[in-house]
Image 1 (spheres, rainbow, N blue to C red):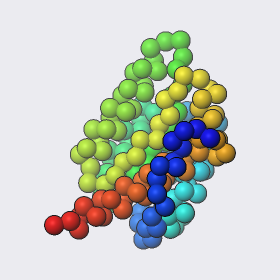
Image 2 (cartoon, rainbow, N blue to C red):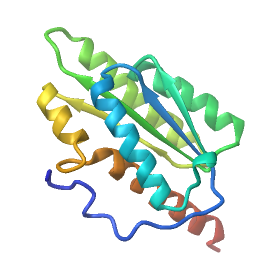
Image 3 (cartoon, one colour):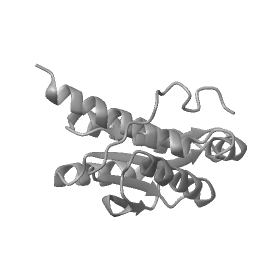
Image 4 (spheres, helix red, strand yellow):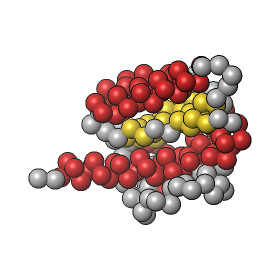
Length: 162
């Protein structure tokens, strides 16, 4: 298993009655579809009902931030998790796509009143992507779901704080 594959998170909070959006890229489907499957299982482990999870598929990582920005504006969701995979190639394209996905999601998350989890893998090789998506090794999809559940619980505490 990869170091830091979610073991640092305490027990998964159970948050029934919440609504979650998942924005997943269609690019690199062999990786992203596995992330999505494990993410959905992770959300269910936090008592999020299937009917309260909306999945939005976008062409690639570049389109994720703009979609999340629109979803946050609707005020229909208690949290958003993003899933994508950008693999370094021979051109600078990786730097632009990965950088803008990270920058764009960071900007949306800072402006939002709900948690937004960055679940876009940025890797050097397809093997690294496969390892991170594999439920028996990296299991990043489930980790991203647990991160969202923890952040939703944290935000609840912030709302209740004096």
